Length: 185
Image (cartoon, rainbow, N blue to C red; front, side, top):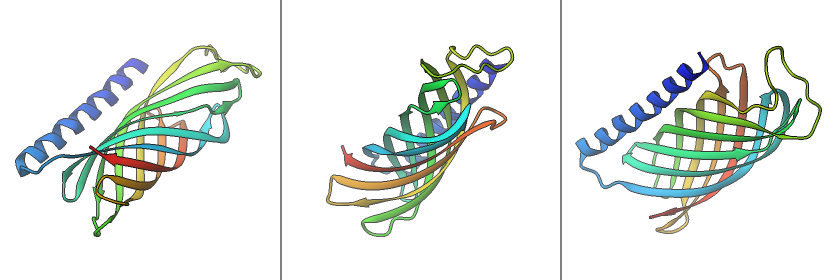
């Protein structure tokens, strides 16, 4: 059951990517690529609640004047009931933007996959039938908003907030606030 949810999330992300590339090809627009390094805080409700540092590497492609496709990987080490874990998020996101000269606010939605792997340490409080030392994989669905601003022709600063529902039932969740520095290439 868990594997079928993961496959469904992967299929959704791949389908979004194909749709965005098709939209760009139909409009015959040059693809602009920007990569960024982001850092901030993640507030989580996993097996325990708390706030911890969060880091992300994001690359986005300008698909049209008003739309962007983004691929991202994020990392944090949330403290959970059983100790800290390595929390990795891989996602694709479709964003609608409102370009205003050198400033562009945006809103988006996406899907992906999280990998949550315990680092050890802490008290283990296992759930019934769950091995707290095992790595878990789950689909994730996210809503995001933020703003990007150009400093010059190649450099961009950004701020981003994301709410992420984890698992098909959204039993777990996270909220991230990050700031980043990006480069066009």
